[in-house]
Image 1 (cartoon, rainbow, N blue to C red):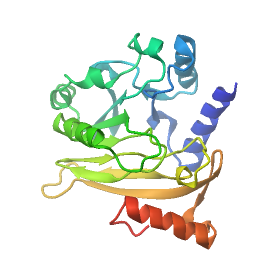
Image 2 (tube, rainbow, N blue to C red):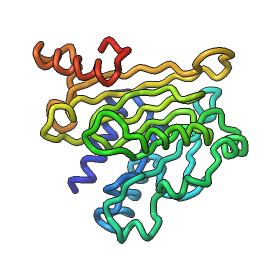
Image 3 (tube, rainbow, N blue to C red):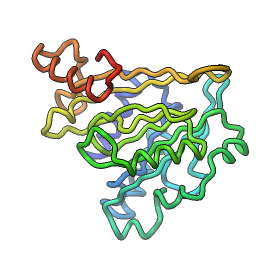
Image 4 (cartoon, helix red, strand yellow):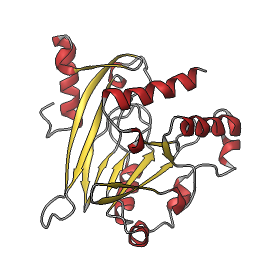
Length: 249
């Protein structure tokens, strides 16, 4: 019951607070906890998302994992995978997409076949509570861009990570925490990453982006930094400036 209510709260927040249409919501279920309650919990998760009318990716291990959505004149593909999985028994069943499944995937070819203008990858990778990615994660990001990914928006570390321009694409190494609260204040610092794409740009970077930082005061409750006590606000702005050196906070 708790999990069902959490899904409802997440959906209500995204639709109500952030004015996102339900038809445009796409969740990734490729994460290290998806097999914690075995096949029963996995199927229950998918069922509840379907009842709520939420699309999801990450449950297939091949190009069928790619969900397509039309955004104005741009056809976008969304693909998800997880580097980690807690349950060894669940891992053997190949129920969700993992790193091994994408090694032979050519996103350039898939984009051409599906006539996609943009490919978004949602990895679940990296080490928990580390703002900056390790060399293995950085190389994985570069490989995904080389394979044809355009935007990488990743999760798992529970803290915000840096944004890097890689060749034609862009990678946000960690989107931070959003619906779970831990003890350390750094995990309460989170945000929404918005990216715009100009399809017919001839020179320069076709992507423009902005991170909208928030501070989690309690489960599912957020405050913009401007409304925080001065001492805490300065502390968070300093951390943001270290993660995003070119940002003014």
